[in-house]
Length: 208
Length: 208
Image 1: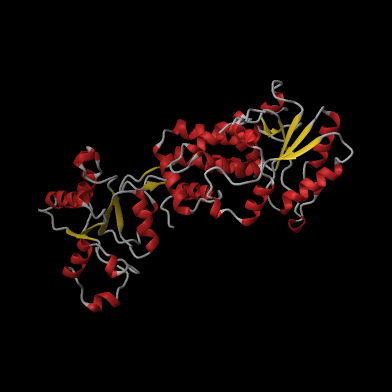
Image 2: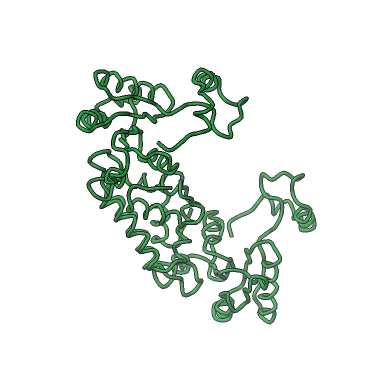
């Protein structure tokens, strides 16, 4: 792509560094911003920079936060005895958006994956064990990826916590709502049959 | 989508204002920027704002420019007698990227479209007529959208210029390279038969 202005070219190149944004999309975004008022574009650029400069991680659950504690940890009306263990901030947003969970979180920052060189020391596992020891945690709900790495992480943590009275659970695996039975993979289908549940649990589900 | 941080939420909302970027994509982009150094993000936000604040339009061809004249108008090695008339800046970038055209441009800013309320006065038509009068223009090449609005614009301009000695041409319409003949629409196929060209033109095409 050949540009008649280096200001335009630099802006397109910056946008094109973002994941999933090619040169053509970057040009479309930049031309869109060009049509906006200077104050709008200043708003855009200020908000992005402010976010990067001022955001930090919650000292308790490692979620993203404006202050020392994130909004979730600071909210005393949430159940303090349940911690949902997730991989990333994105998982917190996904679960929060269901509006069905009212406990706390702990963001590991990944899962144990020896092939990728990620061991327990690279993750927020010590801080989780410390929380379980110091807080009145009654239940850890694992909401990790349904794969070998996720299972390894759950296994590692449950061994570490075997002398604790804390209850360890994992979110249900099964056929997705709206999913077609015939297209489900055998593993999921087999597990969802062996983990079948009483129909009263299925129909009368309340908030936690 | 529910966020635990208003800094994050504001940044996602700003990205989601861009065309073709939904909330989920915006979140992905913001989390990507969060992983970058503050200096990188400052670079991103500065370049975007600088572009919007400092860019202006070439006083001659209305293309995007860093200075009073765009790089193309300022380049005296380009043929000054040919002006390619396009709708938008994007068309200039597309034609420049072919590296086959060595003349000047004129960006109309759109095409005549009465149904959308766009008349000749809304476009850079007077400035084009002024250029043709004042510069030693020998040829106007129209590279407009192949539709009724594009044809109307060409017709309007050629009427305005009927007393001029300037030659008026339009880029060739026909079957695209790599296009399958059987899938071409009838209009295109019919025109490409009636506008057939001698084979020596086809094989021995030089730069302008």
